[in-house]
Image (cartoon, rainbow over all chains, first blue to last red; front, side):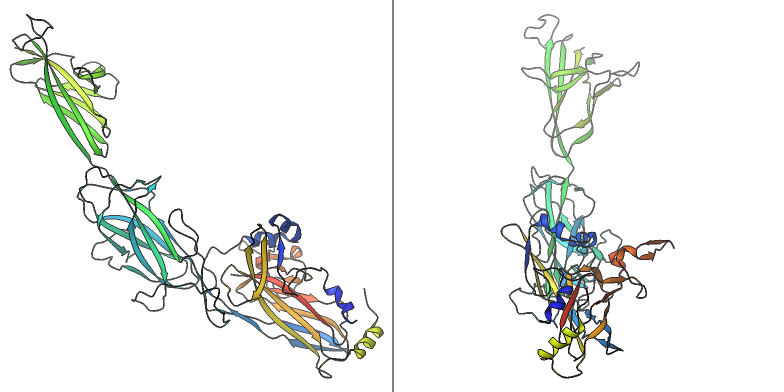
Length: 388
Length: 157
């Protein structure tokens, strides 16, 4: 038959475009089937950028030359066209990578996010925030909720929340491959034991086209819907996020947190008679010549670490400070003020000792310096005086 | 491999179902989208569907189907397809002969033989992204009534 001659143009049998068949193969064997490295690399080469604008009509026409009966002819193929559909993609990222440091009772505290439109069309984004009891490595474990949470879009591109200036609550007409900065603004309540509040921002793709108006949320065109080559379909192509952010739902989510960095520090003070000149160490009484030990215990209820804590205690009238009696360390047990404490160099002469704590006595006041006071890790300081 | 013209014309005459005398060559251009899916057994399926749902990054296949509707054999058939600028050439479709490609519409050849001038003014080996035209030159004569197809793959930018 005539078709014999055409076998030249069909060098490979099997699945091909010509039969519009479905070809099935293992991923590993695909490599052997491919003839060019370009095709191989292209396989994973989904465009990162937004790409050709949705609604663009791609037209392709081939021209043909041939000779028939010795005369050269030219012809055109028909024009094959398709319409570029809307590939909805976005990313939401937290800006800064660290928790927002805040304090109890603070108002209008800001966390910052960036929403990037990777869709091949301009569109709006609906913004919602929520608070979840989640644990995120870099942000901490959520244990309280902020109040009066609001969301605003950076209107002037300075990346900083300007109250009264950044007032938009949705992203309007964000062009492809561009980003908008979004702030979550909230107040910090006074909640006992609270330290970390994790908030998240969800951006949902919405229809663009009308500036100043928040469009309706986009819905992916159902694969079951009979398709028309002349309509711009909507295809969700967003990737999954780390947490509570499924792929291909037209939404992106990122987390940020508020971390209360203030410390709640309290101190208790006790006095113990160590010895007196008559009874010595046995049930000593506070008589002249007796030695009295004052014990100062400082505790940080958190949530932040206390830094530069100074315990200052004026030596009572009628008593004399005993030099080199200042001892700082962990709280002691069984009546002792400190456990494994270290004696602090309380004068200004000579070299200081090298433990983490410091001490001084200026003639009237004893001071113990604690550079860092951890949460629920109390530190005790003891010093002794003689009753005049 | 050339096949005997005389035999071909004889066969063509026997199977003269061609529409009309002098209809000549018709070329039908069709675009398909490649749809990939993962089957339960872990294999990847590729289906060609009408290009109704195409978004950036998707791969499309253009198929040029030609038919000699005339009564005489056609020789020297050359199909030249300038690529729409929104598309990046990827290669011949599965089962199709490889086209000659061009990065300027003037000089054709295998991709490895082509060079493009880079932004630094020097000449660099052309890549698939540089291709602007694809061309097939059908070496064999095309008897009356016979058909053939060529196809290439491209990615929507």
